[in-house]
Image (tube, rainbow, N blue to C red; front, top):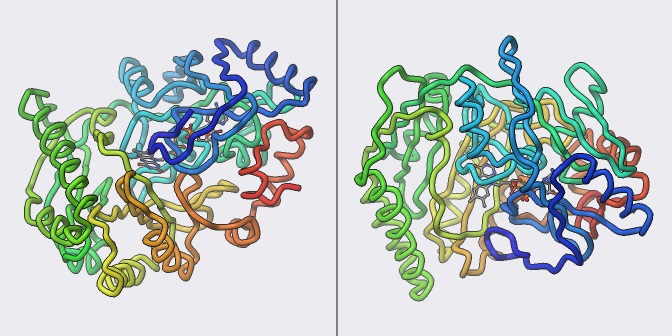
Length: 428
Ligand SMILES: Cc1cc2nc3c(=O)[nH]c(=O)nc-3n(C[C@H](O)[C@H](O)[C@H](O)COP(=O)(O)OP(=O)(O)OC[C@H]3O[C@@H](n4cnc5c(N)ncnc54)[C@H](O)[C@@H]3O)c2cc1C
């Protein structure tokens, strides 16, 4: 097995693909009897060791699809293994859509919420905040249900649970009636954005930006609901997205890999080529972009009040350190929530993400970036690279003890605990 970026490689003793909840329960009960451990994998898109195990690995790839839709409340219940792309299509066929999404749709819904995956939009929380109920198989093989109405405290533990509480078999989502978005990509400057990001967020449903290192240039992405006709997907848009954006970018990555002194140049040239692009589509077809170039990533959540200062420190750090990096730095905005292990717990947030081409070393650069995030109460994205230890995380997550209490109750034999999770959460 390996994760999406190829950084983690491991050999589970067994990989199982159950097709029913009963089969999942059976696997868990047998693992308890045989004192085996279980890790669950969604699409393997996390950069950290979350899915790594030498023991049993369970995939719900054969446990996908719609369970039920409630047209009165616009809530839909889907199986835990359902991939986001398929989920978007299923919901659209029912006249529904997710309120918000991240920038790819390859993940499973259970894997997505388990690490606190988020999109952008100052009025929207992480994707876990769209969940209204969760059903899972706990470490005793029992089926457990929790929701915003029942077992509320357990629900807050289950909304972001790192595969440590149980195997999520069903997720009920609060959806919106289908809607179209108009997304405008436009060149701007970091100076301008840092001055005006609050008013831009007020006027824009989903606002994010990519800062081009060593320059003042940014590519802004602004999406608002529209009634305009959706674009026809033709050969032109295919050429733009797959060939120009991905193949062209891959060539730049290779160039900067073999000629490290060219990183600054690549970033400056990329900044010059930024142009205005407008896309109109149903929401599930617009959030996700193609990511054909593999990279490793660190992403931190910081209180939104610290955003301007953190970006200025990052800019200075690039000038001081001349990192051999040209990948743009992504900035997004997310509303605070009350989920125990959510990086956005208790605060409206900005997310800042740094990427490095997967063939290159990322450690020194990420360390410098992490030092900046740490100084501003940064909380790492659970699915992305970081070096924080259990004591630090305990300080950053005031509700961590509550999560651990529910975890212990649901999995007293620790069958969902791997060495990585043990050290991450300080479990004895
Ligand atoms: C190219 C790329 C783009 C990305 N874009 C974004 C983005 O826009 N926003 C963002 O926030 N993140 C983003 N991520 C990170 C990604 O969304 C998270 O790492 C997410 O958790 C991956 O989902 P997955 O299905 O691959 O889960 P995996 O990585 O396979 O697993 C993640 C966690 O979920 C657990 N899990 C999986 N299935 C279950 C289940 N059924 N029951 C219980 N636990 C389960 C696993 O044990 C593990 O702990 C991106 C990653 C990549 C590689």
